[in-house]
Length: 208
Image (cartoon, rainbow, N blue to C red; front, top):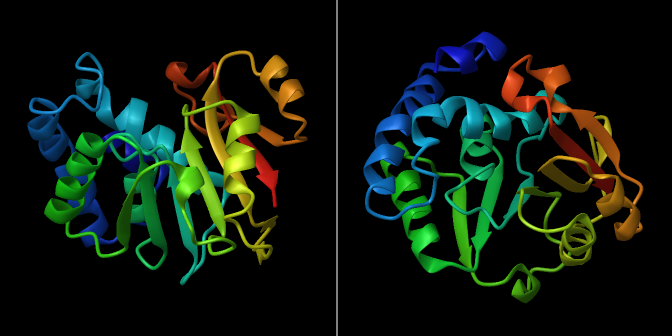
């Protein structure tokens, strides 16, 4: 938790309480339904929460916007971003029901009012042109994410960036980017957070 505060210092008391509760809640539910690698649960704040908040370090979402989290798994990056942006609506989508069950319990225990879930494949979402951004974390190749999200994201402009797709990925991405046909902007997360675990982590952005 101290790690998060070292990079973000303007949380409200409510947000701090929610962030502090993440460790207890995820430890409890992860013992019942494995949504985080058991070896990673003790590194929840660095490997999962701070990693998710890399998006918040670059993109400023605004009140009333809608964000789709594609393949949220255990709730990342959606839940940390929802804590960070209480006036923004987040829809956390996943095709695996037991993972969404954990997400819903975490949302309930944290008292998050700005999170909804969608059970099913993202291609089946019928709300076309209804989201401002889509986010994802290590879910699928960039080309697939772009194809799935494009019909769902309405054109628009948010602060410094047009509406679009934001992906958290790792490793050598040259081949994946080339195969996608996209021309994303890319950030090295190690430049945002000077932690060794982010040396091979990147954030990609494709505008709508």
